[in-house]
Length: 361
Image 1: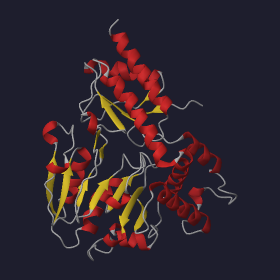
Image 2 (image 1 turned 90 degrees about the horizontal axis):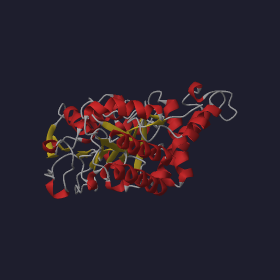
Image 3 (image 1 turned 180 degrees about the vertical axis):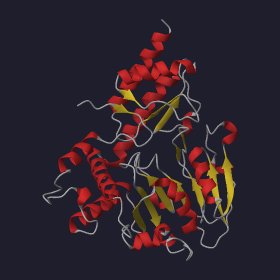
Image 4 (image 1 turned 120 degrees about the vertical axis):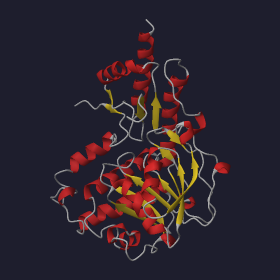
């Protein structure tokens, strides 16, 4: 069996060790005689899986005791609605920082439920930077401040955590969660779709400070109410059991790698290698200033878009796949989440250097 280096932005590569573990447990989990996919979510076997996954995530991220961890469905996109449903708490407006495609989607959804104050907008430069703290025009009476720390499509990343005073900070961390240590206590809500750094698609993780629970209006659908999810252990209905199980295996794997400190060091090194080959070349280009470059999603362009097809075909021959950039920006994009081994980045760097050299012959 040949495993390719999959640079997809999501669903993304999973650690090989995790997939092998799941394969070994597929027919019979821990002597239960059942696959995890067949288990009752309320049975003792599955409850032990769910409990351990939550505890491992708490350990890995050092999540304070006054935060609830929810394992929900609907991906991060459902959170675009769940956040205003649960956090407006009678207020009329919320602050949003617009730094790219996913910020825009969150803003469009929030406008259905409240007045949205755009605290900063970097569309004028093609979403190639993030605003500085002093550029944020925050409303002290806002219900919350929402931002996207890492824009998957543009490869743009905040190099700081916005200061919002007493207003809760909400972060869509879908493409940056678990990539390095963070101080969870600086956030009111962190949410993330699973299919990048957590596990298979079908799951969303929500980490919410307890004082923010219980503020949804009576008209809020039960399935969209954080308090109902929290009081039912994320099992108000049948959860995405297998995705939850797989996420738990990933959390275990991260612990085995040395935790988020070790993951951060590896991820920084991978990103530096890839950006170095771009910056040391007159052939490849990346439009993002160094201090705003994503560790997880590295977009780059070739000098002539007519070369893109040849580049992608040659990459595929070497086992480097899913490098085509998002349709909205073109070019290439290498997503190098936790599961992408350093050897995969090394192989991509070597191929990029070879491709450039061949163009000059």
